[in-house]
Image (tube, rainbow, N blue to C red; front, side):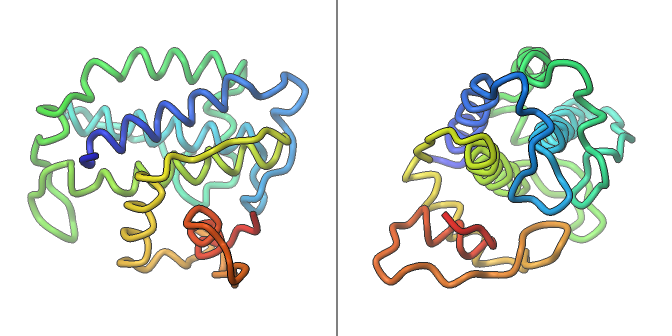
Length: 189
């Protein structure tokens, strides 16, 4: 499975879990410090819109959904599941292989194809899928190929910062790859 396929698999899995959240659980606490389930959806929505803006070359000045923002749920104040569906439908046409190969300028790396940034969006959707499911008591199985690729990526960059992921936990000795990934990102499966 290539990176673009991983992106779509992770986004699809996130959308499926969001669609199953009971209406009375949007403001439930989550494994993300100070964020509710609604905040997680707002954060992932923000990322989706930001990526779509990069694909089209548009500006996206919204900051409410950034990692560590205090209340990303403001981006989906109504029905988060409906707002996710609308955002997904609005952004999906631009998120093609060609669109994701578009070059953009970054402060750190100069001009790079958007695909170099995709692992962040893959890991975000994948891990937050588990966060939401865990917070509301849903059972979710994360795609093994995406878990493997995400595990390799997150271990290659410094993400252990409060605005990204929690401190690494020690997984059980016999932990599967998903549990190992979650523990690395500060989650007890």
